[in-house]
Image 1: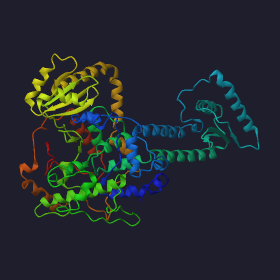
Image 2: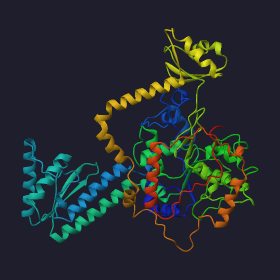
Image 3: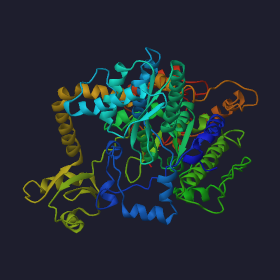
Image 4: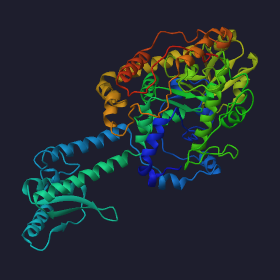
Length: 592
């Protein structure tokens, strides 16, 4: 079923029902990505850190290569703008709801809501000299209306928002009873005020209609955000393939702007989506990486149809035609999400073969898949394979890497010439005047650094020195702005990730209740299944688990905050949210 702007409202209940009945969700945003540099390698450096790779990049721009790619895949650009479903992030929704609540409170007071504009300030505004004549003319027209026995309504000429505000403020004290004031729009989207003579009963009836209409408009404005919030509040597993961009865009567009700090980003993401699983990382990890050669989505879907995997059989509900994998529709977001879900099921079921006796079906709640939770694949990063949302990221030594600065005119051949005495090297460009150079032997690093001490056109330093100086600059800048921006930062952090309790209050009427009803599937593993799953921990050797100690660090402050938020969310979360479990039967390896 295709849901667009025109049928979104009428089918929203079906979406909620599907969320309630789902075992897991598969998502794909079809974000082709854009390059903000001369090449993709300039945008995504092989020696980026997770913080550099996740830094926010707020843009609304077009790039010919991305547009060409989407067009070649049949992307309908007109459909995006003509039939796209509206949405709001949390701050925008909060502001709208505050306006709505303020109106509702006023309607319960002295009955002055009819004369309060959405933009009216709490304090009266003195009428400027250049507007007094305009307001006097409006008052004169209203006096004529009230004296007339024939006319019941008065349509004022379209005017500016400021003039409408002055009209509302003037009428609120000059005519406390007997009229109803409303703002309407012409076909040309020009706003004008309509004044009607009404008795008190009719005034209240119109106010109730107006409030109901405003509430409907608010819900329409929130739009697709209601679906994202329902998915997040369900606490269920969300599957994606190479999903870092999907997660970042979803959090940014439907919740709040992405923070510059990596730990804050991790904390925010796990607050919104407590369980994420990246099938590209899963396929790149034991026990899959030795039997899966290509982890691109299309090739992965084909491989998982072959031995030793057993692809799931898909039955579509009546009225909901399914995609046919025999006729590929790659790079359509719905299709890509669909086959991502199929890939996850195939790989999850394969893990069941390690049980004794083997298990044909492994659910999305099985402990077997927990080691893959909240680890997002990082593309084009040489020695950090994934972003760990639940703890510190890997800290590679990079003791064989040099940071080199040089004139803008230099080319790759110049760098190869400079390091010709050091054998095989690998170059990763940072920008037009700097690059990382990887040597084959770490003991050659200091020799290379020494050769640049008296050089005038270039400079070489170790990777450790480069990171250290960059950290010092960051700390110095932070210290310089700390006093000035402390209060601003506090307010920003307070609005970044609205607490689950407040979020639950906002969406209580629309979110999914988890009452137990007859006929609902029991998604929790039985005691027998749990016992079978537990056995595998004694059957997989340390070699197969590929554990290393490179990530064994104390919990960071970001991690502590994350755990605190999760405890709070767990206490307030609706029934059906999966409890945390420490059991880990496979481990995502620290090195490939």
